[in-house]
Amino acid sequence: MSALPTAHNDDTIVSLATPSGRGALSVVRLSGPLSFSLAKRLAPGLVLSRSRSLASLFKEGRLLDRALLLLFPSPHSFTGEETVEFHLHGNPLLVDELLEALLSLGARPALPGEFTYRAFLNGKLDLLQAEAVDSIVRALSLRELRAAFQQSEGLLSKRLDSLREDLLACAARVEARMEFPEDPGLFQTPLPLDPLKGVLQAAEEILRASPLLAPEAESLEVVLLGRTNVGKSSLLNALLLKERALVSDLPGTTRDYLSERILVKSRPITLYDTAGLDPSESRPLEKEGMAKTLGLLEGNKLLLFVVDASLPPSPQDREIFSSLSDRRVVLILNKSDLGRAFSDEEAERLFPGTIGTVSLSAKKGTNLPLLRDLLERELLLCSPEREEELFLNRRQRFCLQSLSLSLRKAIAFAEEDAGEEFVAEELRSALSSLDRLTGRAGTENLLEELFSSFCVGK
Ligand SMILES: Nc1nc2c(ncn2[C@@H]2O[C@H](COP(=O)(O)OP(=O)(O)OP(=O)(O)O)[C@@H](O)[C@H]2O)c(=O)[nH]1
Ligand SMILES: [Mg+2]
Image 1 (cartoon, rainbow, N blue to C red):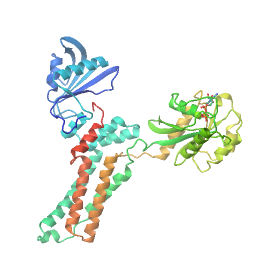
Image 2 (cartoon, rainbow, N blue to C red):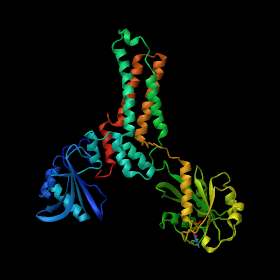
Image 3 (cartoon, protein in one colour):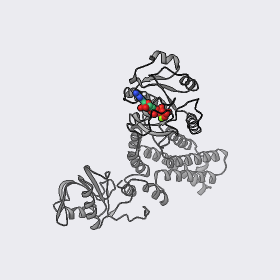
Image 4 (cartoon, protein in one colour):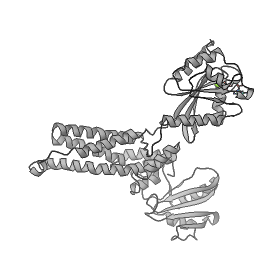
């Protein structure tokens, strides 16, 4: 993949913007100085002064498609360049034909993230907003999505801009004191540190309020455990709505645990299916599987303790349950379709202190919504949602951390009267961290790496 920043930015680029495959529509995006003229060559009837037209597209004299064309004159487009969107019928053959036609007329295929990169170059977005565009596409939960939207609207950028002004004012003052040591006016009062402390506090608040934007960041981890053959794997499959784990009536089917993600009310949960626990087991492989199950119980996971409620509770169930004494446990009374060998009250007496009991049938799917509601409640508990949230990625966190480190040093130097040049040096590096964060001072390598992780067509 050739490097984005050195790519020819005055080329006209083209790409499919919707997922490939059949569907109601496919959207092809064309951006760059030749966009309008290329569109006109394919659709001779097109009126370029109209922002949208239903037009017949021709290739080598044959009608290709009747398509909706949206025309965005520069600079009023996402990229800031002349842009045309072709809304075709959603057939990959048509898309290929159109792409081929545009390429033969002089457009070139867009690199991943190149549309957003151009928007960034043309000052339509700063780096944080550009990254937010990517986060919108990748968000796995409504919560991330909302945060990404706010960020794409420039919420964080605005805040950082005002911090930058304060920081610049302080830095300018320090630089002036170094430049004009003879000027008594500049030295009459000590360097005011309050604005610097304000910037530091604001930067640290942003860091504190922002969970790391990692797939696992807001995921609740849930472990299915219990005796062999009680239906753990069946429950995993039922929650996943697919036959992911092997199910059989032989005890000890699952040996290695496996994990899968599910969405509950659009929020991700990691589910683990584990090897059934059987204290009397002596076969080495089975024992190893069980040791892995126990290893998995470490950390702050929610445990779904599954029992076969069609049979009287066994001493083994009780033994496993009592080893989970101080954990958050949900009791799952499975196989309820076969009739219940004990009541809910008896279950609660036998397995006391759980945070909930759900009687269900993994096989028939009965009462699964009750379990999903309970999981949703747990999700809310483990991460209360705030009015305004920022999900920072690693790069952004790193820049903010460097910013706050430099500010701390600058303040300490100033308070110790260590010398203007020390303070000035730290303020310069604080500014540079801030500018790297917003992309005001992005190194080329950084930009290349960032945008190449985008989807093509973005
Ligand atoms: N009738 C009925 N049978 C079930 C239900 N859930 C599971 N089973 C059956 O119980 C048997 C064991 O199911 P699994 O899901 O493999 O049980 P497991 O707990 O994963 O077992 P191990 O992996 O051996 O620990 C299979 O024959 C399933 O079809 C249920 O709700 N009702
Ligand atoms: Mg299993």
